[in-house]
Image (cartoon, rainbow, N blue to C red; front, top):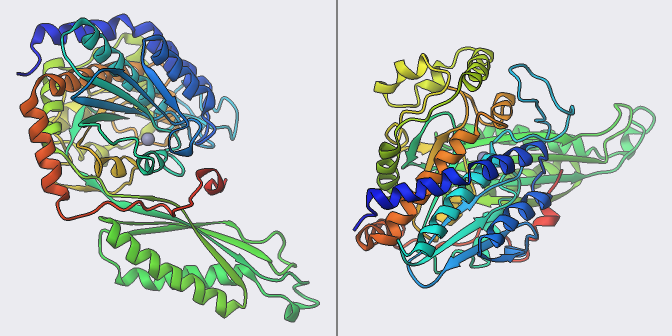
Length: 474
Ligand SMILES: [Zn+2]
């Protein structure tokens, strides 16, 4: 039996009662942004709330100090949620509608992970209360998943078996509308290709030098020719973070960083092998050495429509969110700063587009806009979705059309986004309690997971000895 409305009302009351504490924590994380694998204070603060609420907390999961799993309750079913909390480099920004860093060059929460970790926390706390009251039976787990923006903490947690024994997970991500997710996304490899040559005076003794930069350029040129022959959905992009210091010195070192994406792991691995051959050939042409490191690898997402539908029903039950005049004024100014957002609005179903175009915040729940699609992005949640049925959704924390990793997303994430994080807490709590109470729903979610993964064995994209702390390049 699904959880009845009265019991859901009690879940939402718990979230409402935690409003101030959750809001303060999200604001604190926003004001103290920490980069991937250095998110020590964020991890500690989230853990402290869970410990105080009676969760058992295991830290250092997957060999990452800031990764943790917090559990409350006994026996099965075991349901979980995930919280991210790392920030992005260079996105420092005040909560105002013009580009204005708090500290130029410093990190900022451009992906809303200050809201992500806290929104999931609110959901876990409400489920815990429901278990404590005896409204539902089972176990709730909160996964503190660091370094999503760099090496992908979840992939290490998966390698450590952290998701074994969990029956279903419901997670979310900040965005500009409320919708369940039912689509997949691209698998990815991140490569660091380092060329090492010999330095010399570029005018007086060029014949004595061997340019690492030549090799990096030959490698990129090779990849540009390769690009004609890869599948349409593949994506390959690169930067040259290191290419020498002065034009009159033959560069002894050069580094290229690549992201290589395709709709599944097999596709990514084929492209990675090809680029590896190109890099090695480029090194031979330039008579330099090359060292290739896979700094991250993620799987594509296994969608779960059963969980998407359960999330959608709870969103419909909750309806739209409300904002005060001050929040709407900031949202309106941020919308103006974005300019034309017609392409972003085209992502949501047609019957919502006109209303969204006229709003600063658009919070009517919309049907999964991605059902059956492969989104042009990648996430380490992909690896989790190969272990356990994973339900996902987007909650409206940002003004209409705001792209992730923008300064506008940072500006909205301090105060405005807290409404969306609390909304996410409610959706997570309601859907996880549905799963705890309704055996049939859990069975259907599991059956879909099995149908979609049958005959395909999950293999970790990580090298057996991969150490995340060695792989953070910047
Ligand atoms: Zn993110």
